[in-house]
Image (tube, rainbow over the protein chains, first blue to last red):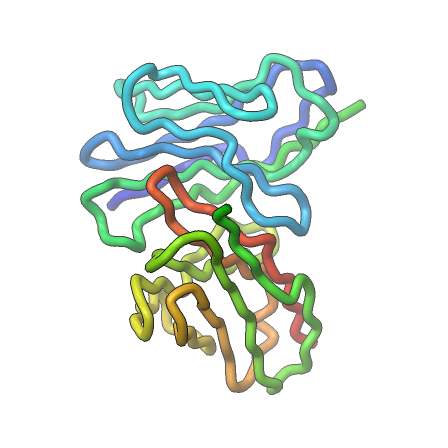
Length: 115
Length: 110
């Protein structure tokens, strides 16, 4: 079955430290890949996406993600975390051959930033 | 410009009362629309999606229903709310480059 896994439910990092949030997917072919961020009580905002081409994609707020086909991963990174990055992060995948209802989300990773 | 509106932002309703949450999009036509629920500490669960007026698909059996009376309007309803209906409800619209989400409705059933 197709699935999206975010292994870390909760991560705590110090302000200024680097960050990596993990995402793995299991699909028969390379899907479209997304990272969304959700601040408390808010909707989801798109950080970045990968459709094809360069496997390292840049997003908003200084985030980047790297698609690794061999590992079926799409990990989100940021070199220096700011306190305002504290939020919940969702990885999502979409395959063009699936039905219209097939954007699959991971369970989310909650990021806490220590001062 | 293309935007999505969702209201109300917060709602506290007693058990057994009806529910109506509204979502509208602007700047596009014939969008695919979605209702998600996010329970506390959990990911997003797709409840309903719609590819056109009057066309509703349900992903999970539940106490809720959805309707699409107009091209850019998507409504989530319930005749009698349960405590388990509490959660954060998100409307979304699919575009070629991904989904755009509304700001969400926090529903607390008491």
